[in-house]
Image 1 (spheres, rainbow, N blue to C red):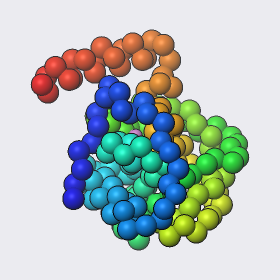
Image 2: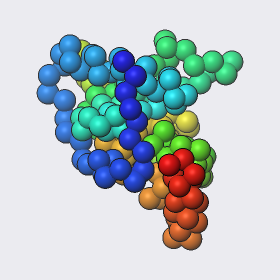
Image 3: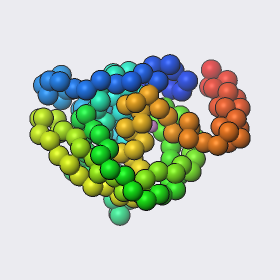
Length: 171
Ligand code: CO
């Protein structure tokens, strides 16, 4: 089932998500629905809070070198935690909760992440480049943060002005 995506400034997006305790059928349904929803809206990443569920669950499905988004590349991270970060990278980010806004954001270039898969198996993996950016962006959602909070004061002011206009034309 395709879920509704919460749009900024919905206050629910500021909620801090909780760890998953049961790796059960309910979690699997949530993960499947998050995947479906992300694909429907042409996204590459989605956190559970974006569909209104305050759990530490995220999905990322990168685009490969052939410009294809294959389900075999789908990553599901449960209760993810960044245990190490190094380097810096500037990357143009977007977000399904802030549609059609793209801004350059600074992040760690490399991260080491501890997480669980849908069956409760634990992993520690290293990510760099796009994957590192995507993991940090989605983990921010789980802590109640959006990428626009990282903009400079002036850029944020400009964004808020444009965003108000955009919301008005859509209403
Ligand atoms: Co986002």
